[in-house]
Image 1 (cartoon, one colour):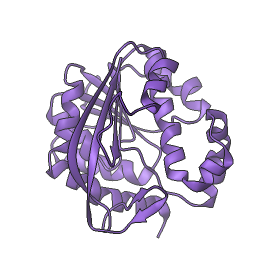
Image 2 (cartoon, one colour):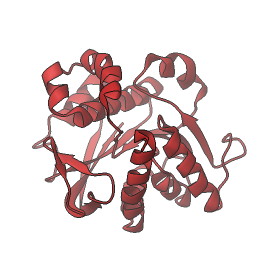
Image 3 (cartoon, one colour):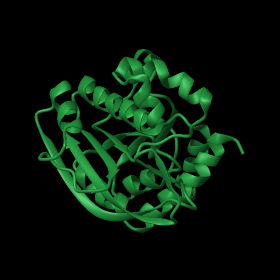
Length: 242
């Protein structure tokens, strides 16, 4: 199966589980005061649907065309409109925020009140790793780190760019990640470093004990190892910076 389609079908299972468990509603409470949301990585649309149900308009970005097609279908079947935000609920855009073209050709035309990046992920093969390698190295990772865990390396790259977009436009950024323990300012270095690098004045953590589909959905990687259990316990970590 094509890797893009395989990823979309697997993530559809995992994200619907998040939707059915109301985890996306919990995430949304962190940005409830902001109208137009730039969603970095909309996946197959269940996070987007939750945003719409809570009164937001959404600019939904994803580099995976298979994900976007599934997301459009879900949103329209749920009674929401797709098009320009002047007369629709969601604007879908196929875009990759890791590349310079996003900043030089697209960002200036987008108007939004907050940036979100929830549970970032992607499909992987040798060509994908080769393509993103220069961007990961430029970001500051080394070849050994990337080889050990390409998915984690890619996530760092995308989260860094999400923060960069928010800083350029002077709007908040909300990140949701998965972890094996509660994360806060006492045991975190990564997000505190991002706050300092992009000069955000506020950093708020929150944590939710949750579970997630792995085997049967998009299998999760923990410390470089694939977790094949059907349902695994996880900690959803909310990081809000402005």
